[in-house]
Image 1: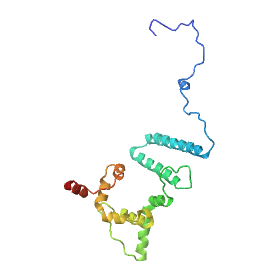
Image 2: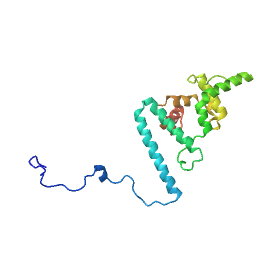
Image 3: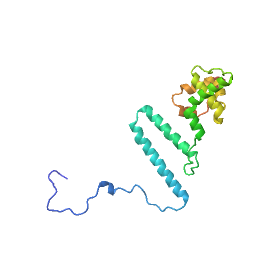
Image 4: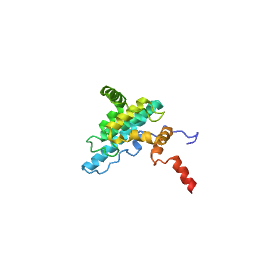
Amino acid sequence: MNSNQTLAPQSPVSGTLRPRSALRKPAVKKEKRGTDAGNFNLHLLEIINMFTENIHKEVSLTLFADHQLCFTFMICCNIMTTNSSENTILKTTGFLPENEWQTFLHSAALANIMDVKRIIDGASSSSGPPASWLSESMWRQCLYITAHLETFTLLCESLASNPQQWIHVLNAENLYPFFSKHYTSPNISKQSKNTM
């Protein structure tokens, strides 16, 4: 429209004014859906995933960086704890048994109780931590977890026999790629390069 042209008042406009959003395609596509439980469960799972993702995005924006990681961890643990129950819909990710979750939450207190019982019973206290970066409290927690969770039965043995590997874990900047591949000792890597 040029600056010379203007809307003429003599030409009336007729019709219904609608917001721009009404002109868009509907967000939910109407599909012919079956009535079987599989489609319902899939639909329910999609709703739960979308809801969880939106909550995570919106809440994370309002948190400090330190708290974002804790919030994300709590959401993941909640999902995994829910998956370990008799829920048949959410069996898409890993699960976290209730006893492991409770041990994680309370291992420091439980380890101290175990230590007191050992002293009262007259049992000899075990040697201290095998590495300097492991505090006495952390070592007691490792001992408790090793004794009470089958998944971690070799944790203390591994800490004592593979200190170099645990130092690499401790110094890793990003643990996700670190744990996504098998650990190879730097000494083994150097030896294989020298033999080539």
